[in-house]
Image (cartoon, rainbow, N blue to C red; front, side):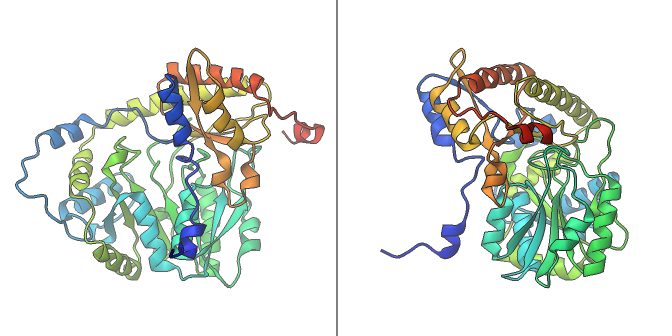
Length: 408
């Protein structure tokens, strides 16, 4: 029998989806499952998008240009300019989700064996993209005690080698919900220029910033015109994850010309997704105002509730719609499977994402979970009650040592 490729064997399974079989068994057994494992909001997609898709009058579902429909790219350029990011349509390429944008960007800028520095915990699929491209992830640890704030610039400096080619950040962060300040981004800018690196920024949660804080894009950092590469997506902004449409953008003409070659190799991004994405550009401002207000209430419901549970530590996120929590358990992997298989409260249980998959070293997230506050508040309140009861019943409950207590 032919063997599986080395890359195939190294490709990590998704920590977000790996427990799906256990959730399916719980559902078949008649239990209700609150899905806090995945960033699939229950927020309604803008009506302007749904109306457009209902009334499509196409005779042929055709290919678009490999870079995407020109009208959509022009509309996106107008959108970026409206939020203070100066981009021309020629500097934007439409992709099949933000995932393809990052993958094509890495393929265009990095060689096998190159290193990319990423603050961790980070979006789990970054590991998968690195395997696919053949590059090495160099993690920079952050701490739950600091709310996963960007590490000191000295920590980045200490990890730069002659193989370092890029730094990758997610802002606001998935899985942490952390929002980086402009001053932090400026320190990264200086380091990138000093060492002649690329700076990739996954900014798909740009609209979701809380507590009066503003989002700052790397595209506005002076001097990074040839270094900054923006990754974006419609999935979260408009609650239309299934459209599978994203974008990559840069002022670096050589990078964008190279990305286009990869885009041509896969022919074109999805036609229906682009039509939906272009329609979404007409979404009224009131939509985002209402959505942000809702997410703040959901965040406070979940995070404040979790921090009332004995032994749980959960920093309050300032962006996106995820929270990282440390639980008093021996293993979050075991606990997340156990709660689906063996626990219910009022015939209901909870699905979470074990945090080990968001670290390069799984041990770092051994007792942490990522929770997505994408459900309505009543369900989040139920989820907190279930977790409280489950942690009391879990046979592998971890009692913190005195040093661990002092650390918090």
